[in-house]
Image (cartoon, rainbow, N blue to C red; front, side):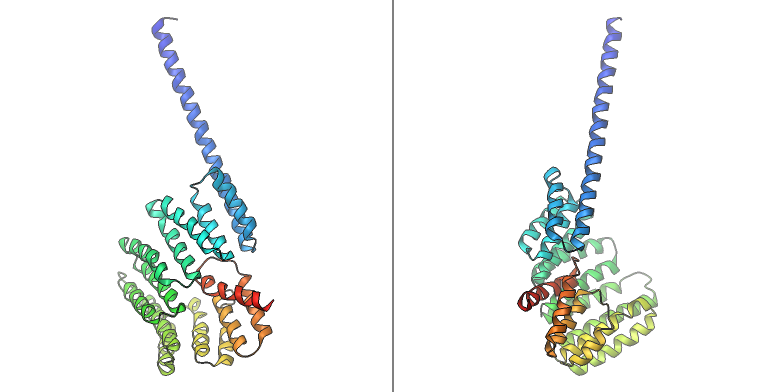
Length: 314
């Protein structure tokens, strides 16, 4: 074989070998990512079943082989929050925020905000919710931004900061109205949410007449929205207002018509039974709260109290 041909052959063979190595590496990386994703999925199922330590063991296996696997950090943080280990949870959420691509940071920001809500720290949560809201505003997603504002408002409300709660709910309502060509039904839906919020704030302030006025306004807006899926939020409203008015009998009756898969509803029911002197039913509902293993605002409001009450009552 002539020298030139041998050189060409050798060069071509090198290219093929390198391509083969690259393909093998790509295949190996894809296989590892798929395996990691499967382990995280298994862990999330264990977490939903309340087996947080087993879930965390799976997430740790993933992170040992792939320290920057975003979903494993998010899932680890969620499991740790559900256990009540908030500082450890936030280390994972911080890492998730660090490694996420710019367009993927919002879930990590909001997960971090939820983590602070578990400890009743809305002034910390807002640092992350604001970033998530700004990202939606940059995309002209006014409904999405409004939803985040309302979420932050609720963090303030359930932490007892009524003034900031009002301001953030108002911000959410006004942001939603910026939506181009907003349909009447959607406008009425946001009016319902705004009235719902004002009624709860008034109830927390002990302003019974104002709360009743806002409940009526919310009901009118709900009827005009013609959105049956939102109807379940009305007995939550009336039950909430009754609870803070000290009318626990009405609170229990109305809250039992609300979403029984919502940990916060179950927590309000537990507290209403407790204030009515029915400790057995209260414990029953606190245990129901703990049976729901979700990482979201309603769990953040309900779970820490339920953990304390069940531990004290056991």
